[in-house]
Amino acid sequence: MVHKQHDTRSRNIDGLVLAVDAGATHTRTAVANIGGRVFGKSLVGPANSYAVGELRALENLEDGIWQALRRAGVRASQISVAVIGTAGVDYDGSGAARITHSLRCELPKTQILVKADALIALEGALSGDPGVVIVCGTGSIVLGKDSSGKLAKVGGWGPLMGDEASAQWVSREALRRAALAADGTGPATSLVRCLLNRYKLHCFDRIIDAVYKHPMTPAELGALAPMVSSAAEQGDEVARDIFRVGAEALASQAAQAAARLELEPVKVSYQGSMFHTGTLLLKPLRSRLHSLAPQARLIAPAFSPLAGAFLLALRAKGINHLESLDLFQRGCHA
Image (cartoon, rainbow, N blue to C red; front, side):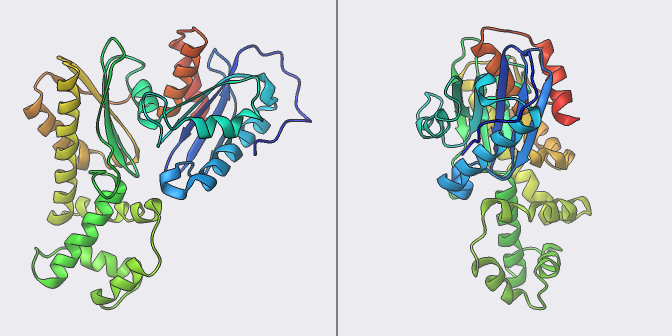
């Protein structure tokens, strides 16, 4: 549970807000004022119930909030608005009640807003403007918004039905294509050797034990993705094709979101750890997007999902201080 503060520094601060980005790998939390000054922040484990289960997700969420409050030296009662972006929450607010209830006893005076993780990513990437965001980290999803606030979601079906180009998907594709190469039914690839080295095996047949003996969490499976990107950067055509196929799927989803909302021209941005691979993902994404939606403009994200949560907190207070986002983001990265 979130612990109440007893020994805190005195602060004459009005309008403190709490922003949370509850991911499948990490949970980022920040306490700031409406001007964007960050007083405390934390980084803890995943608070995505699909990744680690509901109980552990709530424990990590509350631990991250407690740490940020403690480092800020403020009491929970000083927080006026808290915005939490997480998976499992729909855009009509369904799925938010369990989190709100869990936090209510410890944040009794706080307006608690639980939002979809893709929504805070969209708000941050485009500074609140209409457009489309492609979120691609442990999982993947595409979300668009028009000028009236209407939303359109494409993808986001999870690891069994989608998550194209995500860390999980890239890792699973690497395992599948390496198995095809080992069988001789697919093209040769250095991924076979990479996986043997990764799991300290002498024979690829033994990889079944490594993969299936202890079921991997989404984050553990996704941890193979850097190995795949490294192989791609070194010229492995199979690894490069994995990124191409994933990127083209994301481009199709982004074009579909824009079409549903009749956004033309449209700004398309992106968020998530898989875009740290740079041109491996962005080059085929840009090319495919241009062919499907020539009026689309792919742009780098303006701000992080955590800053998107902060922006939604400001809006909840009736404030539109976009200049506060710069200070907030710098404070989060300091």
